[in-house]
Length: 301
Image 1 (tube, rainbow, N blue to C red):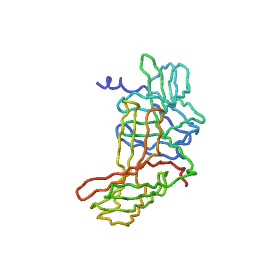
Image 2 (tube, one colour):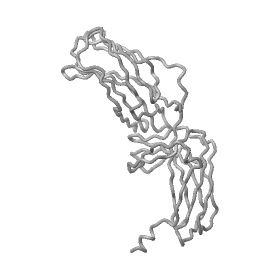
Image 3 (cartoon, rainbow, N blue to C red):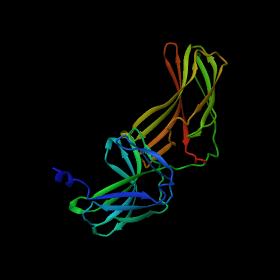
Image 4 (cartoon, rainbow, N blue to C red):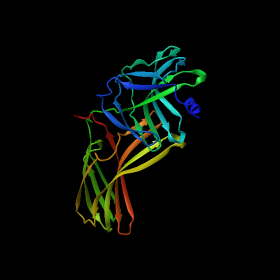
């Protein structure tokens, strides 16, 4: 029985380490099985440098038809699970066909890698970057090892950032005006605004402000839209009167937000909205939704 179990053990151990792995920032990354691992953080145009160590299991030699490392940027739709669309694919050949008798280390380098899109784990789609080492063994079955890493890209603060002013109302019943201090926010920002009640002839019970994320995947007739409410913030509890003004101050840092993503590789988009919800005493709900743009600014140490 032990012999049978041993037959399925890998013929060698592969480890992938980054050159600056100990000093580089590590961020959490969620695996398919729900586990969270700490992995290195990169941004576009960086060099990805490291070494790959291959150690045959004691007493075994490993015959192979060549060894390579690939850097892959992949998009996976959850309705098409297991099928990855590669938008970035770079390869380095590490060794020609031969045999391994003992541990061998191979350095690798991918210079100024173009990684235009950020790592993203959504409801129906994920975008990942991975190093993939393949020991090609033909009929014996290739040995493959993966190492994930995360990519985040930063944008400068916008030069123009207009405030949002809107009026909303139900004829002769309700007329309110709301104002948010800007239309573009960074991930640790604060939403500051005011709501003015110009006319109130219905009995309002409460008012909430929600942050909503809308993820669109696919295209045309196959577009699938998923909306999540990430935060709900009570602005008012009780009936307002005409002329009343209610301040808004909503901190974004507690929430797991991403930047706004526009049509990533023609596969998906992610947009954010502020949703104002008013509820009257008969539990009727009134909505007003406004899109905002989310940005990732470079972190200051």
